[in-house]
Amino acid sequence: MKVSVIIPVRDSELYLEGCIRNLEGQSFRDFETIFVIDSRSSDGSESFLKSLDPSRYRTVVQEDDTMVSGARNIGFTEAQGGYIWFLDVDDTPHPEFLKTMVGLLESEGADFVACNFVYNHPGTEPPKAPAHVRVDSYSGIEALVAMNNGRLSANVWDKLFKSSLIRENSIRFERGYSEDYHFVSAACIASSKVAYTSRPLYLYNLNKSSRSWHRGDDIARKDVEIFESFLPVVKESSPDRYAEFCNASVRHLMRSMTVASKEVFMELVRRESIQGALRYCRHSGAEMLTFRLWPSLYYRVGRHCRDRRYSRGSFLFDPS
Figure (tube, rainbow, N blue to C red):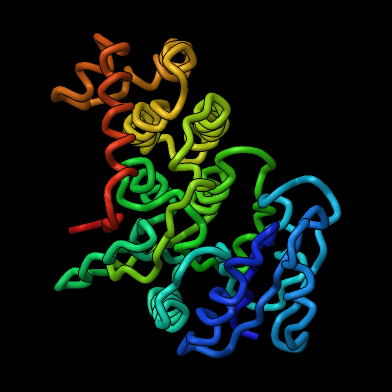
């Protein structure tokens, strides 16, 4: 078995038929599908999954309350494929997703690969694909910096991972917020090579349950905690890239923290880790200057920009 597709399910009856159609429409066929259904589901999701061919679609019941993080971890323990794809049940992958991603991973000799994608408001017209597709290659620490600089996403569903990378480095999803950010950061640090294609192969369907629609103090605090947890790791493993990591991470966090309330934003700005990282920042320009000197003003502008970003129609993650 080449690929294991792991899909958490909770009260997802409305999306399951579409998810199956998307999987059946994949031009690459050497994959297994593992649905991990939360035992607390109260709709017809479990009945629907039981009606599927068990030789093609396996279902595992999640009995604990570890949410999507636990579901993905459970799915990984059941996976038999050499590559892992963490698919969200309500999204729309391109029919060539697996074919392209498997080909890229193998041709590049990468530990994991990522693709461009589209943030999509249901009912809007997805943008056209870029005329020219490029492939970028990174070392692991370069990929971590690229993610914090916004050139790679912090999501797992737009990526294909080698099972051995996850298993041999004991990479797991942590319970709580920003589980993707933590997982991808750990995967970057453990990787020798990461590849990215600018071809958009995934529609991320924005809806009211998406993180993008909610501001949350817990999310912002968690993002900062994850950054703090990797600071000593990067300093020890890649001291020559430490300043670059701090530089990129501040860029990521100063935007990420606008998801919080103003009070929590100001609390996080004053954290020793943030202030220490700022000393490594080479940023110039209005955004960094405002963040440094007038964080309250930066927050107001940042909130406005975030709300506008997720209120418009479809757009490419990487429009270049």
